[in-house]
Image 1: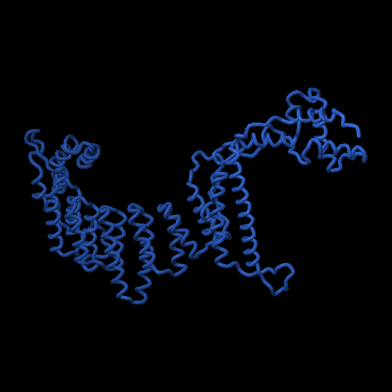
Image 2: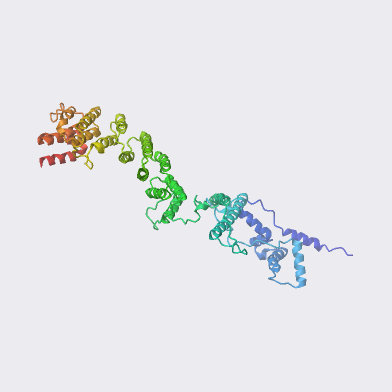
Length: 529
């Protein structure tokens, strides 16, 4: 047998020259994709560099074989038997890949951007692979979630299974399956946040709320000052709008109101809705008040809380009064008084609390020495506590047992005992002497005198203790209380001594209360008229 021609070795040598040089490890997903493209498209990189006519004959043959290989495999190009055998012989010799990557239309594949706005193609291969696994996991979870939702909808409709008898209805989903889907949604939310920066709200994750279509805020397009709600608050409010529109009163809506209140306790609408739920479900008022106590301590200045408490008090009082439950009334009075003491320890001048306290006294008839003593203790602690002074006046002069119903606060009330007026005059004067510049005590004194139909002049001697030498020069004029000066000016008006009253008002405007000079000058004009 003749020896093989040496041309064979030359062919192998030429073929070896067509192999691409080893590329360095890729640093990004885009680089790895490019390397894979060139690995599955022999001589393509060389062609891009020198052009088709710049390739050697061997390289050009290899490139052509690689180009036509997919077309021949898919039978888009048909060859004769001889040509086909020769072609596949060349494919085998050059180890050409049957499948190859196609050239992307753009320089890099559009992988999109991650939650930080970075091009996903610029991630390291390791990070890219990890992201791909997360995307696959998310797709699997979404498929399972869709199946759960479909099963539950079919169960709700009581539709039959395909191929089953008409009596074989879908089984309801079990609580375990609901909990499983709840956990599944939490994982989906975490993956969406990690992959795309999308936030899946608490209610969107909860199967219990799948039947509710949230109603988002209707912000006009291009609004000048659109409210930037936090995501969790915006979601909760959108579900609140939906259930309110549907007039749903259920345990889950009660929990929803609690959540919204925890986010924004000043949302007055949610409080009104919550009270309707309490009424509709006939919930325990003491339990609701117990919950409200903690909310109140966390939101001391909130008005809506106290309005809600007022509604609860009225509702509960009507219930226990209808049942003639004296023990329940006593228990309510005791618990409410104790809580008011607790919250006033935190904020002694809270207007809303004192206003509610007045209502509580009226509703439960707490015209007691204990209530008066408790109020007096606040004045003893802080003589400038206007709210405590107001409550004392209310207790003393609005008690149905010792006052005329409907009598105005500044009107004479013949039903008030003279000894009560005497006692309150002494009390007001005692506290005014402790803090002469405290307006609360002087206003209280005026109110007491009006209730007893006593002239201001009856307290002239007391007021004169704080004023000396008015109009007698800077060296002799001494005023320890501008409120006493005003009081005496009104005394002179009452007595008809207009010039003296005008002098006192002038000194107030010029020296002792110039910030209200306009008012004191106006008073002078009124006297002159």
